Length: 242
Ligand code: F6R
Image (cartoon, rainbow, N blue to C red; front, side, top):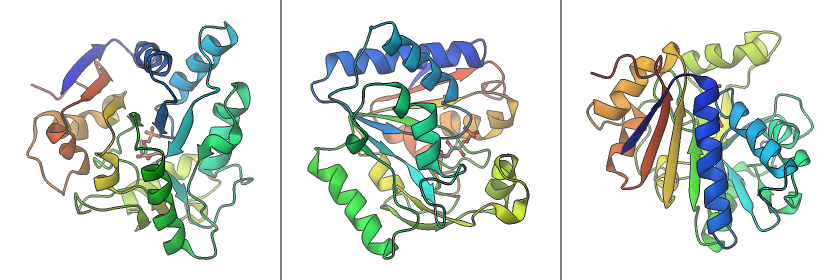
């Protein structure tokens, strides 16, 4: 695990942008795994800037997002499909047909999960996966206790995650309690992973990810066993790593 310590959120976002752009330029038909939430927003802003400066093209890029709330369609402002369209896809030259986010309103959600896995396999797997980290150590929506070999599935969100995500909704009752999430087993098949973390709220979980026991109680700890992980984290997020 390579750890890049940066000063703050801005520096984290710039460093991540540098690595993503480099990967896109060097890979033929790159497959990116993407995350939503507050953490990668700065990264996406910088990617858009690079694209507008003519420094990178996403014409040959395919993306797979980690997760989607169950019950929200892609036009819902709190859906992750909407987030990705607004924060990234509509501002760059990626073909929208090459952007995949699980369908949270699929009539057969089990089939949706299986099909999502199949699509990832069909393109040869993910070259570079971007991850954020939950305050409880979750990656994607794989909450503590999720099996390390889990595949894309329907997951229940913990109270802590609902609380953490309520800031995007009018009230906690509106936060969906379930999601479709790529599994931990699916995520760690990515050839390369970048984990982003910023702020003190992530410090306890991040110290476990980096130096704690590898345990299903702390999903992100599995990253210790992947041979190509880069953690880009700021001083506050790294404040509990000895
Ligand atoms: C989002 C995702 C989640 C977030 C995590 C951190 O697609 O899979 O695991 O990365 O909850 O969220 P933020 O970045 O909002 O702190």
